[in-house]
Image (tube, rainbow, N blue to C red; front, side, top):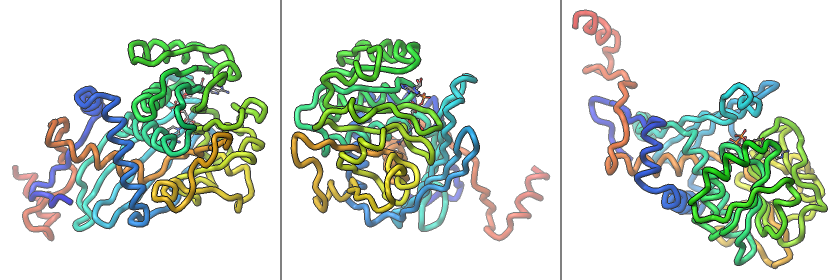
Length: 349
Ligand code: NAD
């Protein structure tokens, strides 16, 4: 990709600059761009090094590393998931990530990824729904109205043409926040008092809740045939959102089976239960939705390639917007073998 200059400063995209970038590009434009970027990388899926993410679990959360490479560029994300964090005024999910040049191993960019993860997760969900949701879908139920929720709503509006979102959260304050934030978005926003009420007339159901347990946000009798379920919140061993019976009558689509079998809704199923990979649908190797009565499920857990696509998108736009700071992050002695001498000379300076 880029050859690092002799002074190997690494561009750093702070939270502040990421927010500016979102405003300068426009959030719906950015969500559409990211969906296209991610889809383009899913089209060349075999080019990527793939591994289930490396997870370090505790009783109340998880810290994960998500690496991948296309042979030219390497990327990784550090991300956590701590559902009880919000009680202390902290976020459930925070992240940062890095792109590097495979040819030299030098970093190309370090970036905040808490906002970028919300954007890429929503863009991936909406991209998947374009292949899987019933034609003409215009109403989406959004269960779990926390940090990811507005991003999901806006991605489905921008990418899939959703016109109404029906909101439900066990915490009414979260729903009120979501209603407030989506005012003026052009979406019809309907707060609901139960999950059952939220899914009335919805052709798409997004579950985006956080709880470190086998939760049952949707039971089998709540889900009519023909809907598309975008299950975002179940993304960790022991953390799911859907009753197993829903899985048994759904066509299930996943990002990367070796990771999803550990982390996704399908951890509730036998390890050989058939699933289709999203990249196979996009490249025409597997069927997507094949009938209006089919219940489709995108069992989203978030995969490294999506972060890679999102980081590369931000990296490509760095020079255009100039929204970064240079980090003095790579030791850069004049003589590459004289690292110690560089420290000695620094004492004199
Ligand atoms: P958050 O804590 O900000 O919001 C979660 C919301 O879910 C809260 O408002 C909470 O009140 C609500 N909730 C909990 N149990 C509920 C229930 N039974 N019914 C209705 N609402 C309920 O978390 P967030 O950042 O919005 O993330 C949501 C989930 O998505 C988390 O589990 C997170 O790990 C996951 N996530 C997945 C991906 C992915 O790529 N698949 C990416 C980011 C986050």
